[in-house]
Image 1 (cartoon, rainbow, N blue to C red):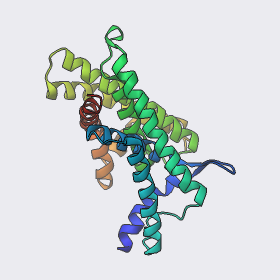
Image 2: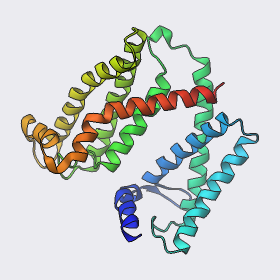
Image 3: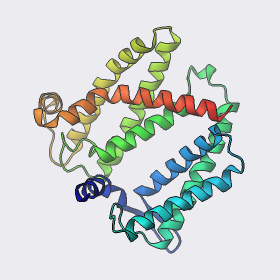
Image 4: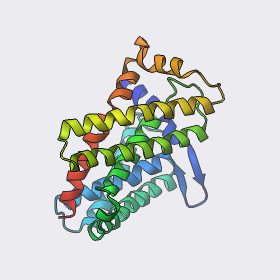
Amino acid sequence: MDWIIETVYSSTHWLYKVIYSNKIFFIDYWTFNHIWSGAFVYIILRVKRIQKIWLVLILLLFAYEIIEILFRIFALNLFKPEIIKDQINDIIFGLLGGVLCHYLLKFREGKSWNKFHLRYPLTSFLTAGTISYLYVGFSGSGNDYVPEYSGFLKISMFVFLWIALYYLLQIYELFLFKKQGELKAAALSSVIFLPIFFLIILLMNALSQSGAASSLSVFQEIIYNKGKITETALFLFLPAISIIVYKSFRNLIGQAKE
């Protein structure tokens, strides 16, 4: 049990960094998780055609906070103790996620993107942001290739990767529109994305305070370092993972708006 607690805590410690705090609001990186979770739960409730959806959403968000408290009561220190205003804000921001999702679905229904030659741009945008956030946070945003990333570089990595993943998904949809087939569209878009992804890592390396390494040395770190099999696999399979998550989101959002 101890190693589970240690693994969870070590993987999520970065989420506790405080971004803003006053007498009313307490915002850390967990806040974005709660916004996303609220939006995701709202979509599930829409898919299940739940009545009184806002009441159910609030009750689920409240129940989650109760579960966190129970974890601490039973000495399962998976999460750091929270102050009361943080727990209240978690519920408020979770509800905000649901509200944002509600209006995004309305916007998606009423907007024609054909003239811009875009396919499911909002779904692509949300999927790319989600994958980029998880990659930057939980993989150390390239720390295995470039040590000592600053806060600025983490945000830069997040934004650049978000944009790159967005266009990966748009290119994937473009190949599908051109009748290339699922596997071929995924393969072609991945081949285009991976060099861009490598250039982003190289750029972060060049901007880091640790000094720029050569492109060859960074490439060798990613591909040839046997001690980093997980990182190498994540680098190579990130396009496929993103496309799978995107297709799941697309189908789920499609059901939610029916």
